Image 1 (cartoon, rainbow, N blue to C red):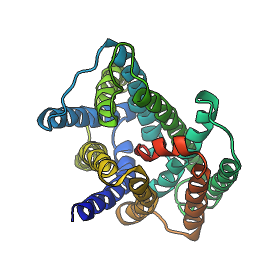
Image 2: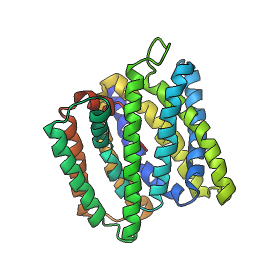
Image 3: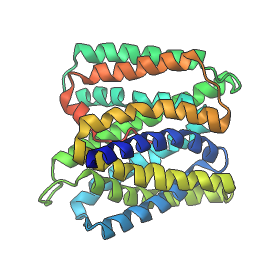
Length: 314
């Protein structure tokens, strides 16, 4: 019965992360990008800290850990969120939910460069399939009501978001396997997420202030607030806690299977909420990109295990 509830929560995580893409498009077209990210992380970070305190998992990082946390926070909260919000201004939610799926392939490539992992045939096959799927998405997306050049720009920005999240994954892998400085043990994924969010918010605050000074204060509409709150509380806090709970109870490999449901829910969410278009090209792109990721990870055990323990980024 307990595992049944875990599976239900993981299914809901996939739904939440899928709906995060249309929510992101609403927010991105309502307020300025860094303001949107700042509001999201103010709400999410405060919620995370309250959760740590009342769940009995409270800890405070030492000085050497903070150096890592600021690096991770800068990439995940500033760089990734910047690309995400700018990208969602230009492309469809369904298209973006497919583009971000390329993230594990970027991670595998970076692991070869920085973690001395080996290139293997399955990775090559996976990359070819993934790139083919991305090509179909670029040229044959059914969302033709969005100008082609805008979609290309948006998809490229989301690809940059996927690459930045892959960089973040490598840093988190190192942080979770090697204690920092005088620390007695590495931080766990929840501790890393919470405190890197705090660090990222500290970096994001002056950037948002500069944006407000140069472009004016951006206040969300009612729909914008709904989107920000959804991204903060549901996509960031609740979904991550439930996903981490799934990893603990049924393992990373089984939990990761639910991540592959995110793009279909992103496409369906875009169709129902934003009147985006459906088409067979999205199905072919999904099969090629997701299939490529699955094949690429088959022989890349150390990287895939880590990727499976991490949300795909949103």
